[in-house]
Image (cartoon, rainbow over all chains, first blue to last red; front, side, top):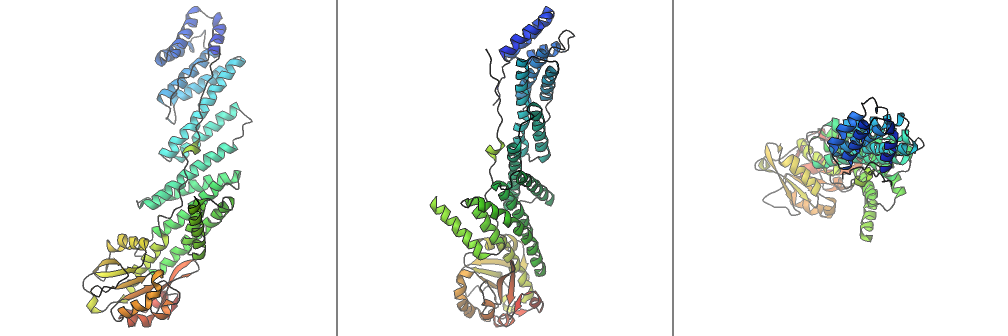
Length: 308
Length: 176
């Protein structure tokens, strides 16, 4: 949803106070820019404020730069909200930072900070596009780092632990789910894609475990990532594979299934009544031909389903 | 008057849906299917069974195995120059004696009956039941160290009218 950000009236009143020293023509232009903005005529607001901030009399006026930041932010929201490298956003950031450098009073500083936070958060909000639509890990990381860097400048004491967990779980979850869908779809996909996606998932889930060693979703995600690697070896086994090689392929797949198991068991310890975890354990034991365990967890799954 | 500046930080997790672990792909069925197809290379069927379709019959519920065989063998391979046909039935059709009969564990109790019906008919009888290679099966799937392997009974092969390559003895986990 796009919103028209209203320039705070307080900011405007301050602005008028600041610019009294300047010529009437420049004050007039600034007021006109403000009016255009309020009337949602962004083209007009942009043209006028762009000329104000380059005029020798007003180029060092913090309020003018602040308004420019608002106008460009609105442009960003209207036209480039989904754009990874938006010039309008860059200009908005540059303008607000310039306003801050020029020593605005406390009220304007506060308004500027709010806009910078919104700009920082726009990076975070864009992650969805590059994660869920195009699975572009590098861009997701860049966007997240931009968000963190900007936010840290505004709130140096901010603790990003929860956001780091959320980001990495989302990335890991999306990549591991995509790999699983590819495996089950029967469609052809390259080893390179599979390995790359699996590696991203593993890195992301491990980052979560570094922050929260007992995180159930990350444990489950890692278990699935390893399981997928084993399943892929079996799925891709050619029907012309000589019998003596079938055993070796099973051996290689089992290494992954065995790596998967401790993560899923730990997730099960955390959430013994989670049907997806129980289903996962049954699946891993099935792949390992551990029939008794497979039956045990399948029974637990049935029991859980009957209770629901 | 001061207007509050509002902005929204969306949660990524709101759309983060962890996929189910449901096993839509059956890894063990694939291994069995590859074994079944490859085992046929080690046997020679009687001359009177070398015309018409090469019939693989599955006794019992084995939908994943049937899917694997249908998709990868029936539609893509021939065995001994014969087109492959898959039958899923617990009844032996006297007019359609299978070249390969795979009996799922749920039908293991009927092994003796199937063996009697198929004596000298040219059928590779495959089971998945402890001890079956010592009784009626030619090949019996077993699990050893988390891996699917098979046991082999040479005499049973002869009883069903099959000639077997000596190589299969080296591939089996046990030979009877």
